[in-house]
Amino acid sequence: MKIAAFIEEPEILSGLSCEEEVNLYQRMKQESKADALIAVICGNFRQDGSWMQEAHDNRAKHLQKKGVDLVVELPVYCTLNTFDTYAFSAISTLEKLNCVDELLILCRGEEERIRKEITQFLFKEPENVACDDINSHAVEFGKAVKRLYSTMKVRFLSLNLFNRQEKPDENQLSSFEIRLWQELKKKLGEIEEQKRKQYLNEISGGYAPMTEKILEAYQNDAEMKVLDECLVTKKRSRGALRRYFLRALLGIRQVEISICGLYSYALYVNVAESISEKEIKQEYEFQEVRGMQMSDIVFNLAKKSSWIPVIVKNHSGITNGSAAGKYTEGMEQLDESRNMLLSIEDRAEVLYKRLVEL
Image 1 (cartoon, helix red, strand yellow):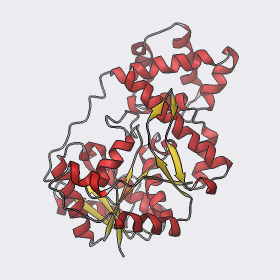
Image 2 (cartoon, rainbow, N blue to C red):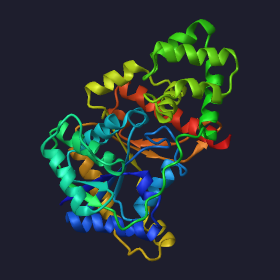
Image 3 (cartoon, rainbow, N blue to C red):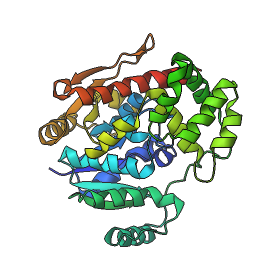
Image 4 (cartoon, rainbow, N blue to C red):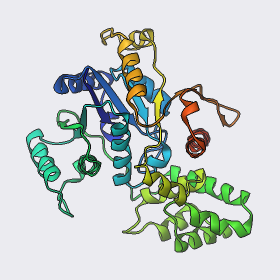
């Protein structure tokens, strides 16, 4: 049995229609000659610190309805990081599943040109690789495969037939950043005054000058625009600032990230609960009926082969400000440190719900 996997690229997939997406996953299986397909997705927050328009549990269901056999969600402490760390975490998770034979990396542009450029890079890794912005993510995924000495076969899949969705304008302050600042001010208000500086300094990605400016803005009850003007620079993007705000709101400290780095960032695998065949048929009439037995086979194989704990969460939404999703499998395998990291996921789910409602 052959299993292929791909890592979700929201900017690409959100620009496809339902039928185009179904065709894409069929193409993945056909070109890789795989019997099953695994998707690695981020949670409710993207790597650039923005939020997903569709909640992670709904996205997982839709992916399964469109032909993906198993959906794996990256922990939020992996997602809210620089892209090279995000890529490394995703590849590390697939590698530790120990059942993936081939990795499909989504690319943009002319297939032969992209294949040639990235293949040359994979065989020779200079310090600075010239690559257009469109496929910089593919390069990082390739670098992660090499650095982990992964045995997975790599295939670069060109998607030049589809229209590219435009990126949001990073030069303009959005309502989301304003909401984040409002939430962070509330968070700081809950912390004793003498402990605020230490709290911010301990957050992953924080440092003294940034802390001073944030605390000054908090004391002056400044608007996000004022803070944005002094913190967003050529060396620090607005995306990096969003990630820091989210890490501060979720309490993701540098010490935890450092420990995770010792384990290649993959300490457990969070698998989305499988859906029924009836749900697939009801929503997508053009989709051929496929036996859900394959999802069960892939899941059982992953559980048996994985080098790290595999857990399953039954997403039932948010109730009274707390995460109501129940982990139905694998919890007995988690030690204290892994449970601590898992608690960040629950806080992220609650925060997402709160931000959506603002």
